Picture 1 (cartoon, one colour):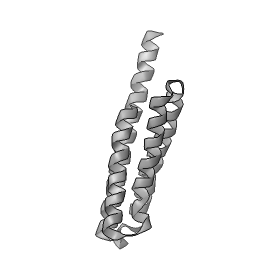
Picture 2 (cartoon, one colour):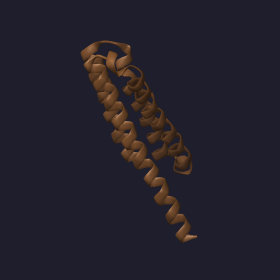
Picture 3 (cartoon, one colour):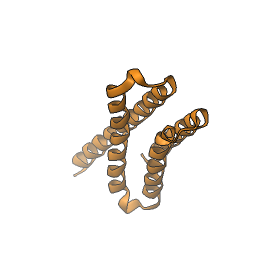
Picture 4 (cartoon, rainbow, N blue to C red):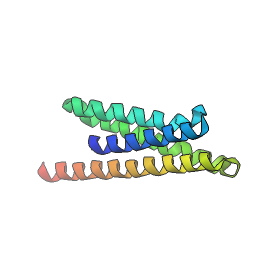
Length: 118
């Protein structure tokens, strides 16, 4: 799972940097910040096998917040957003939600495997 998180982290970083290059506003970097946090968590999970499970739980929370923030922004003020802001929010929501679903499926599969083994 850490490798998949790294891929999504790089996509979020690219989304944020691309939006920043186009708009030159600091808020355009929000997906990149989320991507950096996820990349750090995935890197730590790869480096420290004993802490991997706990780091993955933290990554799930980060992905959940990464989906929740743009969903709330879209719900509250989608009509007032510029096309770029709308696209960035939808992109961040989609990437975070897909990552969240993948991580939850991984946790469920690991729990099922542990139950059948023990």
